[in-house]
Image 1 (tube, rainbow, N blue to C red):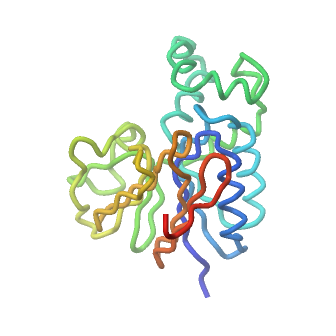
Image 2: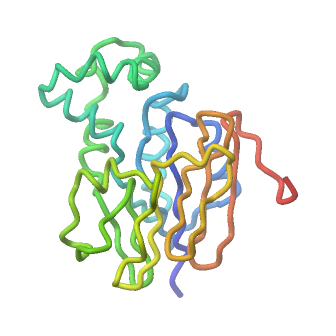
Length: 222
């Protein structure tokens, strides 16, 4: 019997929320967890988030996707130092503080290697997952990487993909803490680093788990 297929939205350094979600989800070896990127920046513990995801790889099938914040850090580590100033104001200052350094090259190698291992898209029989957005005019294997990383759902979300698969995305923060559900597209970035929640979604059953940045689980009646 196949395990669950669970997506987790943008983390942004919110370790307490991730720990609360994982405690309630209780991942099993045959579960697949797809994390939608933006592991770093803005929240208090980017280092702790990546460390926890490295541990999670031993508990289940983890499929981490790359977010635009993660991509900027990788660019800087690969020599694009001109991005440093913008990145610091974009949330990078909080990331470096979690590593107790102001130098990106001091971030542990296994954490950078984790980000380098992230993919831009994950596809299953019924769903596809990416961080940002997609072009409904193009096959899934011909999508523009920048759109997958940076594309927003505002002001107008993309239409259904002709593959018939349901898109599971993050990046466009739903500041009311509610999943954006268009049927053919679900956005589960529910703004954990702000006043929203971290969201985990079992894409097959529709079960939802949400926790705020302090690690308090949201009740179903909230």
